[in-house]
Length: 154
Image (cartoon, rainbow, N blue to C red; front, side, top):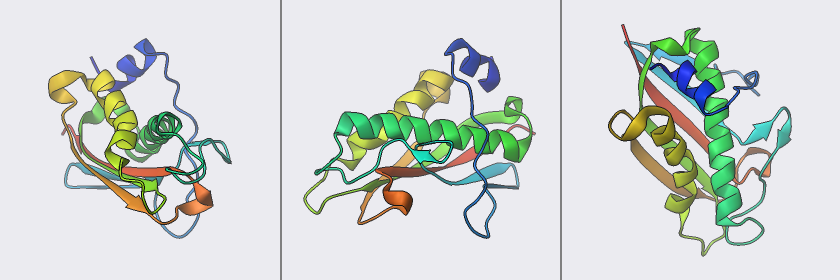
């Protein structure tokens, strides 16, 4: 089963991908890898989850934001490679969490995106490397931002 079929099974519709906010590409393909630029948890221009973890934002809300940001990353991937049928697997997930000074549960937030990767690809194919980092601020005061590296089939 390919990624497009699995998205349909899970009733996930990919949005139109967002235009870059500066001079960069939403995705770049090189030597069988797709590198997808950072994505915020947005619906159109509206940031769905904003604020700092450990203050205004709960872990559950931020996990939902990480899931939404991954869906946006998949939309950027689709637009970059032209066809999600070419996707072999997600190799790497980087998650940046807008964190209060004493917040240390960035990994729990990242689970919102990692769980969706496992739902889409299954336990073996869904295995991926991951980094979750607390940061002082994100664009548009988003609670989370993520990027992915994807292996493509030849």
